[in-house]
Image 1: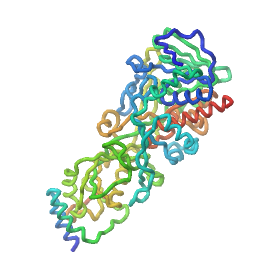
Image 2 (image 1 turned 135 degrees about the horizontal axis):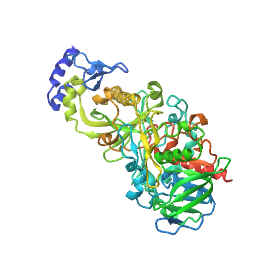
Image 3 (image 1 turned 180 degrees about the horizontal axis):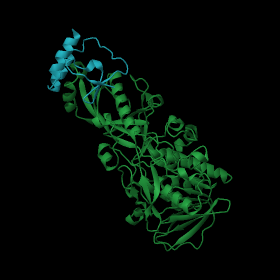
Image 4 (image 1 turned 90 degrees about the vertical axis):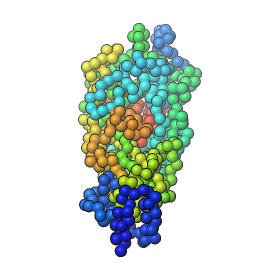
Length: 64
Length: 484
């Protein structure tokens, strides 16, 4: 359920203005946080991200 | 007292001094003033005048044959106060682990931080340190790989020639000679230095300075040039000349990424050291031990987060983008990995005195690119762990491209500077360096080298503070050897 919600919001976040991103994200803040495993990062277009940051619609991120 | 050889008649003869110091920059002034304050007789020779001029600067002209670098005659100033006339005033001592790492040059420094700490307070006084930022503290939410650090500042940056001019003028047992360039030493049959010849820039005044001890304090490149020259002309006085000129280092400075911060996130408790800069964190000993890269510190400037939000929101979930309120550019100042191929030699071109100019073959390598990449990734991990924000690393850094240097680096990194270190490294044995733990030349019992040329490694700290600590320690050593 949460994953579906992330994908939806991830799609919404693409190419929209920041206010919209923040408004959409606010809905997620109530969801329980999932702590990333230590040292596990994903690099996409230079961004150093937690695996949990990645929208499931994104293809094959590199890892480091 | 001050005697300007450009304006005065030469003294008929000079007395024998306790100590002769060549070079009145930070290191030379520090040694000379400390010894004079203890009653020692000191001759201090400065090749330039009270102010700089192009004819004097021309002696610093040399060739850069390695990676792109700033011109040698623009990075150091040949005048009273030396390069303190254009420094930025940033100070920090080397960390203890900078001196104990043996993985960088095969051996650690022959001194430890406990040899320098007693001189920290006085070094701050000499340099006019009057401000500090932050504290050396573990980072909340971090895992010990990065730490908040304190930086110290001389504000406005103290120009030591002006700062100590009155003392130089009124101290009777300290003779400062301006426009007096050292030429060549003389040695006794037992290998000790006995005198130093000095001349004014017109070449029409020549003096011979006899002393019990000699200190070469001309700056990293110029010290090396003179030692190479003297060694060549005096029958290999340096005990192990293969090290002379090798291991030249500069800090690397550049932007390595941009980041966004979540609402309320503060990546450090450190207040900004200037209106628009923040020096806030550095590598820890455990991180360096695990990664084997150079020491580094990270700092930032603010930037609009709008474009970054647009980028990250196309990649990450809205959850990851939640409450982004600020953006920043991330900069690094890092240690260059010591490199024997990076070296200073004598060229074929000559200066106005007919002496060979310096050739600097500054070399960096893949390990330096690794330092930038590992530093960036670790900062990115820290932002995630502490849930502070997210980092975008510059692609060239991720790709392991060569770090930026010279003019290319300058616009990328506010505060970038040409910190010149190494080439005359200190060592526990003559086989492994040029000077001993007292900064005394291996092979010449009474000739000392002051300045950052003796550094074996560079850490990330700006070198002026450490070279001042070493100069103060040298003054103690010489005072002791003179019977104090």
